[in-house]
Length: 61
Image (cartoon, rainbow, N blue to C red; front, side, top):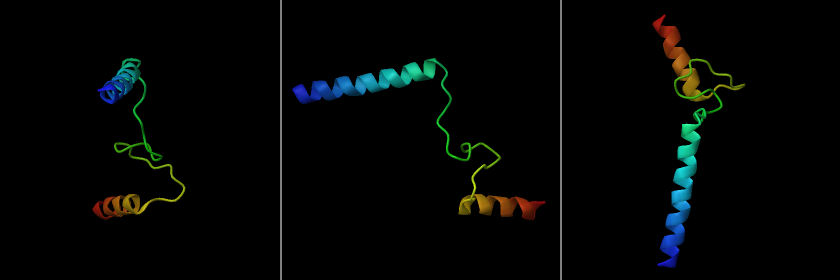
């Protein structure tokens, strides 16, 4: 029972800390290219997924 209470307390503390972070309006975690909704990539070497997206956009235009 002790392990359960310790684990529950730790998880509760983590949830509370995440909630406080959201309340203070901290920006969302983003990847190195600015996240999923970002249209621009600032990576030095573009990944295969980005190359494919750019090729599809070029073929549409």
